Length: 242
Ligand code: NAP
Image (cartoon, rainbow, N blue to C red; front, side, top):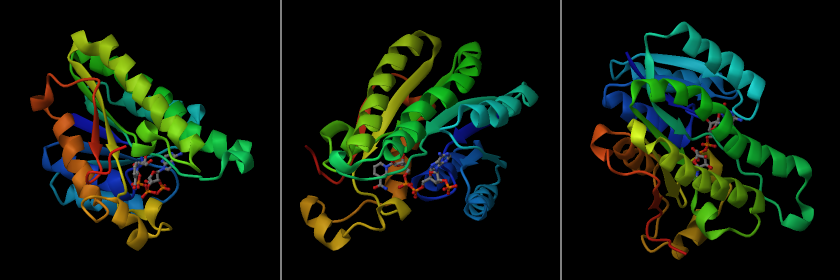
């Protein structure tokens, strides 16, 4: 059976991606950190598309949790393959560099950049053996442009962009593509504290994006049809370029 693993799938962009991948005929492994109620809602929505949904609770920034939960799932499901990995989980902890605590730095780098390493390595083995796979990393405009108050977040996302390009070249001959999407401002819990009325004036389309608009691009990059696209970063930002 074909599975897609979506990290941070309990809410926001990860939920939208999970539902749209289910519409494409994938069973979904729904990773989340703590919000089990919301993860269950995503699972119900996936089941509503007549596909299987399984919750995988682990903190992507903790190697031991990733190894235990994801490692065990892979061990127990040797006949099933994870064809698609979407590294989507992430957090924002904004502060000016002068005032940024070591925890703020480490939490943000851990849940994005370290997580990319911890999670992708588990899934890559199966993809290499099957000579097929799609990895899509959810980065950010901040990782391309750099945003003041977000040295941690910009560094994490820029780091993943570099890793995307490097890994894409490593695995290109094995039928595996590795790409990234870089959203601008998307309406989710992560951007709830931002002043949308003010910020939307900066965006040529004069609005925030919706999670589904990111998900559609992820689904395309994760499709069989996107077979000759690898190592790219696709901006999804309503024209808000650098
Ligand atoms: P969100 O609504 O805040 O949801 C975050 C998701 O990530 C939740 O499912 C959360 O799980 C999960 N998560 C957070 N830390 C985790 C960890 N350590 N281990 C496992 N899961 C973890 O965020 P979003 O806006 O959908 O963002 C999704 C991705 O898009 C992030 O990588 C973010 O950086 C990126 N992005 C977002 C925007 C935007 O404007 N929203 C723009 C650019 C990029 P729980 O529910 O269990 O907490």
